[in-house]
Image 1 (cartoon, rainbow over the protein chains, first blue to last red):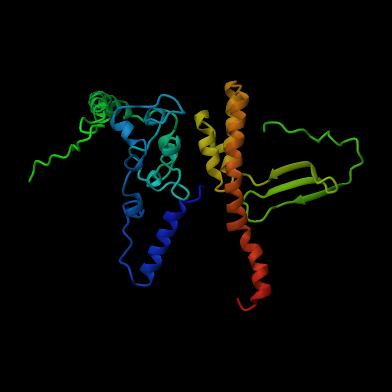
Image 2: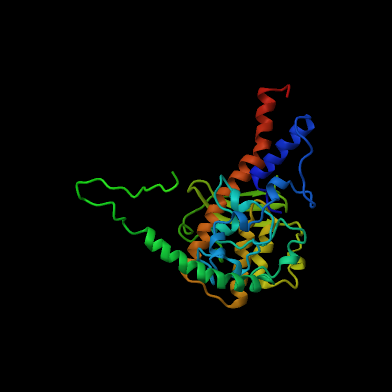
Length: 170
Length: 146
């Protein structure tokens, strides 16, 4: 099977050594006996592409930098810190680099998640919901974005110094 | 690559002094990986090279009934060192099954991926697995007490 994520492995070994030496309390484990500080968050929560999901922006083919859920990514519901931690020296993490999450840290892998390359069941409902919200939020954000990208009036080549800082709270 | 020529024709007409060297089984690799090579030491060239893995791993059994698109995900999980080779072979098998003829650039991408994994393999095998065996001899000579 795959090698474990090396930092996760060393952290766990170090914790257990501390525990054996009596310097640390019982290692915090979840119901599946995984260390909670490593598996307490989902792939989605640490994913570089998570904000694309929030804006309802989904990739329809490989090579895109958008959210991969339509291509079969299970990261929304899988407990794993690989997107946050990366695979080697903080670089990588399956969905960050364009690979779909196939749920390899979850009991029932792989049979529960096959066929991998189909959209997860239930994702259609959630993605359609988020699409409606995402369209609105994307429009609003693009308006604000073009607004904040404009050069402000108080920056000019005239001799007097003007400022845009007008505090209202004191 | 999908196909390899049996011999290298470049200096085939010249008199060769081929020395047969076999490594079977290679230590610290599960699957009894064996390498059979004919090496031309004078011209610094490997004339022929074959590999085998004689332990039954059961691909044909555990892949039965699976979605063929999942082949590279599943087969590559069999090894922590050389997952890429299994993935690449599965991709070639998929291409053959679906009748896909990838462009030359796709072959470059696969080879680049293989090259990247080659560096990864080399570190894992050389430094973490077989390195221990080399260290044993060194430590035995320098620190017999350990």
